[in-house]
Length: 330
Ligand code: RIB
Ligand code: CA
Image 1 (tube, helix red, strand yellow):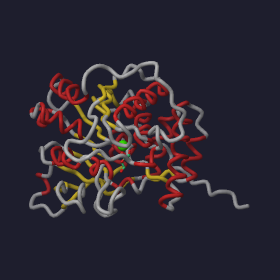
Image 2: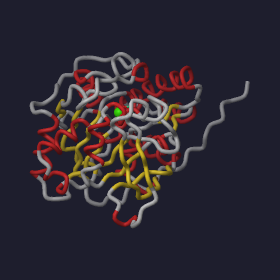
Image 3: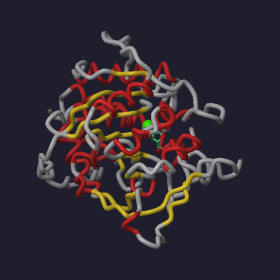
Image 4: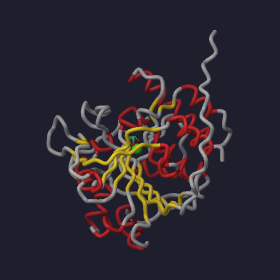
């Protein structure tokens, strides 16, 4: 029997330039790939000062995304980071979940439990406003890997946060790749298109990781097996989550490796040179039943230097996995 080809993983990338530590609010909807992104962020305290994890309904209901974030936090040993629950449903449209892709619990087949430490008081939207207003202008970065409901609510609560926040790194949208929840929409944007429209028309600086780039970063069998050899709780949990996603990718999509969408956002924060970005104008369809949640990504700009949105077009997938492996091993 042929031995599975062992992909030669790229050597771990040099550690990030260890510039100033990024003060981060991480808004998510765990969610299998959100969970791996959380492990990556929790394992990088020398690069990321996580001010708060905020959660919303998305892949699964809001009570489950909050509980799941607390489970991942406990496995990672990072109960120092507060979790704040947020939006129970999208701004306008009826709630939609991600169906089978994350399992009933939202964490695939990973054993779930009642975490020792729960969520903190304070709605996510209020906490986002308070943290941004409490820090100097430009100091706070937001990572968003679920529906953008909490962020849109925060912008409506206190519009001053738009100019005050640093930048927003978002997993969402699709251009060349087409949609993954409908023919023309990616799930995070489709789950709350009106919230996405609020964020993308706010003028805030956004870096967007759509399916065009996340579909280049896939947990194929060799990469998943490499993670399974790492004997830390975070790596073992991540391997379990990836094996669940890969089984669905095989059965539903017919592929051999599930894309790790949300970890791309954190990987960019840790090692931006692993990704190629391009300035664009980005608008979201909020009215058409056929195209609801579609992201129109326009590169033809009169003056690209004035663009507030950057679209990720390429990723060095081997190096992303080398970074993920190095951090999961900590
Ligand atoms: O389309 C992929 C996105 O939708 C990811 O963030 C995944 O977690 C789901 O929320
Ligand atoms: Ca997500």
